[in-house]
Amino acid sequence: MARKMKFKAELQQVMEIIVHSLYSHKEIFLRELISNASDAIDNLRYQSLTRPELAGKEETWEIRLIPDQKARTLTVRDNGIGMTREEIIENLGTLAKSGTREFIKQIQAADKKDFPELIGQFGVGFYSAFMVAENVTVISRAAGEESSAVRWSSSGQGEYTVEEADKKERGTEVILTLREEEKEFLDEWRIKEVVKKFSDFLEHPVILVTKDGEDEEKTKEETLNHRKAIWLRPQSEVSEQEYAEFYKHISRDIADPAKIIHFVAEGRLEFRAILFIPAKKPFDMLWHPVASGLQLYVRRVFITAEFEKLMPAYLRFVKGVVDSTDLPLNVSREMLQENELIEKIRKSLVNKVLNTLEQMKKEEPDKYLDFYREFGSILKEGVNTDWANREKLTELLLFQSTRTPAGKYTALEEYLKRMPEGQEEIYYLVGESRAELEGAPYLESLAARGREVLFFTDPLDEWLAGSLGQYKDKKFKPVDRGELAGESEDSEALKDKEKQFRDFLEFLNGKIEEVKQVRLSTRLKESAACLVAEEDAPSAHMERLMKRLGHEGDFPETGRILELNPEHPAVAALRELHAKNPADERIEKYGRLLYEQAVIAEGSKLKDAAGFTGRINELIRKNLVLGE
Image (cartoon, rainbow, N blue to C red; front, top):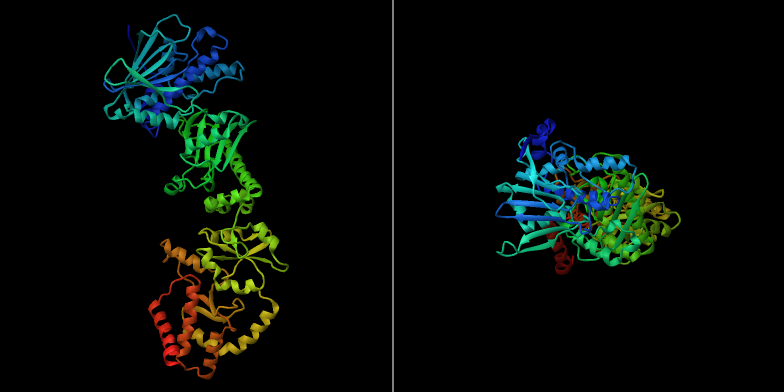
């Protein structure tokens, strides 16, 4: 006979919160019910070790999902431990009073270390069913019990009924009568999607049972979960092919990974992880550039793939899984609670990845270079954000330079080894590409002195140099800013030239208002002119970048310095013209041409392109047509 009962007072008070506020996504109800079913099976498996009569001869453990479109029901059935009448009242009528939690307490009290890994310790997962169901029925038969089965039923409105039921096999089935607006969870594709997302690596098969055609009695079965949690197996027992297949399964990449990191942390902190470093930049990084690549599992049940505290953003290209029995979940099991263990796991994961990259750089330089071309710009972010690993990350940096062939790179340590005696700075030049920088006039005097210059062609590189400041006591020096420390004879020769050019320089300083100063330079050997910024001013490349990002108003241009090569014939001829006739109008026009060619050489655009074209055409006309 059916007996109507009320939920315990505390459950009535919080049922509204459980149904409407506790979980962020309704689909989680299926994860919870499948996890409960898995727990029930593990519970029975464990108890049958000492009481084999509980399980009988059955060795096939499974969880079945049975959707019924006509009846609008979804059934989750297991062949686990089951519940008695008393247990079903106690477990389903009281908040946080789940059988799993009580079972774990019993195991711990018995000091048995090999109890199965069970989740659902908060006892609220079952009630998530009411997010999608207008009524929930539970039919259960306890293992080893001679008494009849029991039926529990409720609409979640504060009352439930309990009565005898007809069920011959042990185990539990949860029958959800879905609300009309939640019928999507009866669709095969939707069920498969949720199972794959949350329960893909459960040990027990999750089987979808559907009707095969119009015949009501004919059904078809399909196992939905992958089940192979290879991170639980010793590394020596996992083949390269299995690793590759698993990587492709979780990443949806078609290529094999470049590196595999499989390890187990034991001791006070226990967790298992398989991390993969991709060979190519995954497609999802194009659309979701800050998405995490890690999947967090707690005892083989998926929790989240969006927990940034387990891996810093600059390692977001790393794919893999982390599975822990120690991580504390909040009551909804959707997120982690703040805990010192989280930081310890993060630190361990980061160290493993950085150490692997360091080893790859030393032992497999070509492979590391391929990796760096794909992910180097992302890795650089860590120099500014991860102070604890700043030194390790700096050693992983690679750059092209005036000494490397096109497409080849050098590390900072190698640069230092090649530095000639007396060089105290690491020279670099920032620009869009190597091709652009190779022809820059800033390199001329340095090349003549045998100085190597690094090419910074990544958008982050300029911030990187400013953040690093120095490497092993050698300061970074941009060759297009400030004054270069020239050799003594160059400096002495320049002083003599400055006396000869004084009047000419004063004239140009008054005519070219776009620059703060016109001066002579030892920086140039072949070019006539170049533009440089002051020591602490942003470079021309930075100004151009800010404009493209829409920050032109917030990042005003800074007046730069026009440096002239006193040995260049054009500059010398113009000075002589000024010495003969300071009023000659050609001096200002040709002086402006020197400025404009310097603007072009630094990679910037001319503000008065039409005027520049006119001056060039006039110069051609006078030289070729008039012969002046």
